[in-house]
Length: 140
Image (cartoon, rainbow, N blue to C red):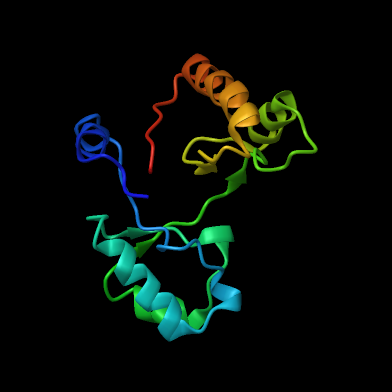
């Protein structure tokens, strides 16, 4: 699904970044490099960015070498766990707050599966960051 052009432009106007994440959320460890790169190029038809975040945080050295020609690879250091249906929204908050530090890149998901936990945790995490005096930027 492609984001509505007005929403996409609003994200950029608000100072957030947009990055490529493959077209089909491929796991780099389980995908041949040529297929992986092709899938990223397919997504690039809709996403104008030199940023790339590998799904699952999994990418091979061969894929890194190829992607570094055109992309800045962005890895995360804090996984909220919002995708885990066995935990609560409060557990997501604690997962993040425990590991969060200035400069952290936190992964939240905008999927139906993660919605209950993400919609509970994200506002609380943003408030925590605000109390710390930290600036928050999104990479969508």
